[in-house]
Image 1: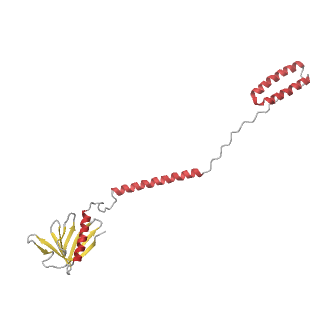
Image 2 (image 1 turned 180 degrees about the vertical axis):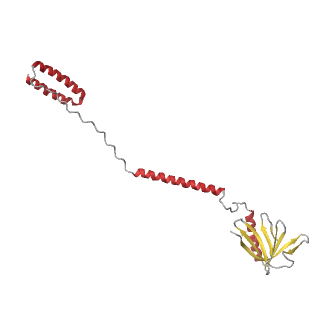
Length: 231
């Protein structure tokens, strides 16, 4: 952004001559009215006073930067002066209103250039502070995206139906019932021997199947009865 005028007044621009110790018109020997403006450059935050004669040639009679530490003096209500690094300038205003407007704008410009710098002049590229802020914003964005992804996965896990229970292990088939074998028509000696075999078989049967005690007892009773019937 370029310069723009923030103040415009009419005044006679004067210079103080150290040799003659008097004020003389700036730019010529004759006194003439000039249009005096204060320009501001927002990009560089600079100010300057520019004056052009109202005559046809519009001669530039003042082009003075407003610098830090410059002293501005309102000598009279209509005549103000200040010193730059080369000379002393004076403005003889055509009205008190113009004098007040110019003085207020000059004071604002001096306050601005004298204030501590908050930020440097505009640059083509981002500053180191701006780059660091951009990196910090990128990290925050990535952390937020990662947090959202984990939250979506958590919600998907919670809402998913539970897995069906595993089928029970196939239990072995129950053993076939163990029936005591009784041989019909046994002789007496053989019957006693068979009873002894039954006793051993019952003991073995109970050893393998202790929970079938009642069933084994019933089978023994039936077998004994059959043997006695055959004797």
